[in-house]
Structure formats: structure tokens, C-alpha cells
Length: 109
Length: 119
Image (cartoon, one colour):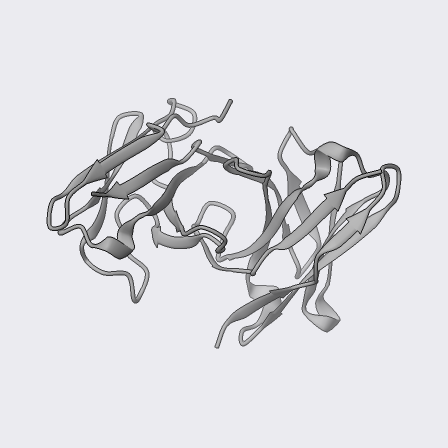
């Protein structure tokens, strides 16, 4: 059982927006502003998409955005494109360790 | 270009030892932490631990403490993940990732090392 809870799946049509949630506790997501989101395509290494809740690394499209409210963080993908179909994982700092969510498979219909 | 290059796939028997590597290039190796992450077949990501190559300060996930050893050789910009006695349940893809600090997101990631443990 993963430390952070994500829905197993999410979907949307091209051009639509989809939001993936990541539920933690007051010891991780709720306490630290160190939530990251990773994208993983099949057979590939994960790629950092969001760090520190809502910051985007250079090169990541601004269609990807992050937010947090209380113990729950969210990743929103706007203007869905076919190449966004992938697994998405959230992670949070939890005091001398990092915890991951179980992952969400995003399907572009 | 900042890169992490991992050692190749391994096939081992239960009880054998193994050390896999992750070599950094294109940046100052001692200025960033290196984390190790496990991904079992068809499963999600699991954070194993992290090392500061500058002083070999290591933090382990409680789930992996005592099960693996994380080390680094800053003279050759390489971090390691080691097992003394492999189990079938260690079969997984193992990734390394660079972190500015433990709490920060990891980027980039290595390409992964597939470890298969089978009798």
C-alpha cells in the first residue's frame, strides 16, 4: 500500500482538462511544500513534471500545473494531447524520506 | 548535458550479491543528492533512499533499511546500490535520480537497471 493515495485511472478527450489527485497526511503533503509529479511512459524512466507543488522544470509545457489544498495535492493537465497518455506519480517529502503515490494511468480517449 | 547512466541488466540467483551503479556527468556530482527508486514489474515507484556523494551521508526508507546499501565514489562520479543476499522479490527495475536536495523533485533520472533474481 502506497503512502500517498491516487486514483488508479483518469481519462479525457483531446483538448479537455483532467485533474489527478494525491491524498496524503499532515506529516507529508499537508506539512511540506515539496510535492512533485512525475510522468512515465511505458518502458521509459520517469520524468519530473512539477516540483515544489506548482513549479515547472524548464521544458515542461505550461499545460501542466500543480496545486495543493490541505493534505491533498493535484495535477491538472489542460488541453490534453495524445502524448500525455502515461502513468503519473505524485511524491512528497516526509521528513528525511520521500513517499510516492500508487500512480494514475491517464488515458486520452 | 546532465546525464545519469546506469549499469546494465543483471540476472542473478537467490543468495547472490550484486552492486549496480549510476554515473553522473555534465554537472558537479558532489553538489546533488542521488536517490534510488524501485519499480517492481507492473507496479508503482518506491523510494529506497538517497546519498549525498559529497560526504556519503545516506538516508534510507524504513522499508529498505538493512536490506540494501547505498554508497558513492565521488572520485568517479558514481553512486551504487548493493545487495548482500538477493531474493526473488528483489526482481525489479531500479532507477537513480538526481536531487538538488532530498525534498526536491528528482531530475534527470537514469535509464534504469533491470535486476532479475531467479533460480
